[in-house]
Length: 245
Image 1 (cartoon, rainbow, N blue to C red):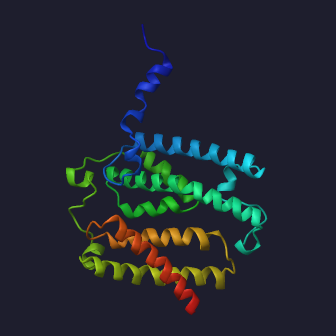
Image 2 (image 1 turned 30 degrees about the vertical axis):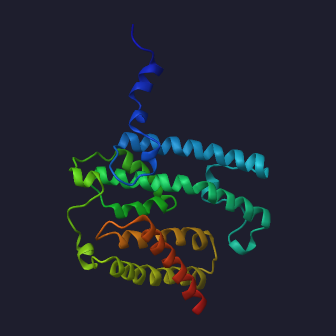
Image 3 (image 1 turned 45 degrees about the vertical axis):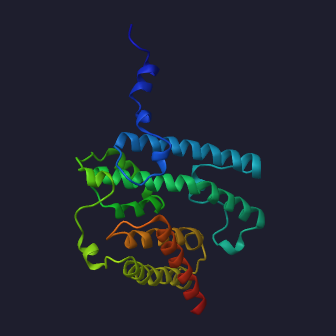
């Protein structure tokens, strides 16, 4: 007797290759099937959780479009009412574990595809991240050696060769690169675009910390806490620079 369609589907799904601990681990590599399964399942869980919080906690509608425009008729953070600020703060807080899992799995998928880990930044780009996800779901895997599977790149890019190997030197170079760029992005948004928007207060700090750690760990593997320090230092120095200006 042939197994039912749903039984065969359950057997073919890649959920058996996924463990809870592996969702948070940046090491290793995953195939496009596992990546697509994690991405779609994570979005379904996140979307329904957001809908429930918005409806039962704040009596408001939440749809797909709200991920790009969380609050209608508000283009600047300074005009957000207190109830809306509380709602948005809770939504950002609920997003943090999903962002972490998404970044970790994207890094592992890029590694399995033989692509640069710097492309992980596209995970944070609005609209672009949707097409980036589809691209990674379709791009074929590449045969990797044991070192690459553990997240160790035996070769060095020309950018990596320009960076010092010491932790202190890499941290200094990381801050010298990210902080001026961050200040430039702030000045571009406030002076030229005249907008104190969501990108300034949410996207920019996240991307700055992420890029700072990427540069810091490009030459040598670094510990988790030193990466945390470099990310927080980049954002803190940016804030001090803005106060000085």
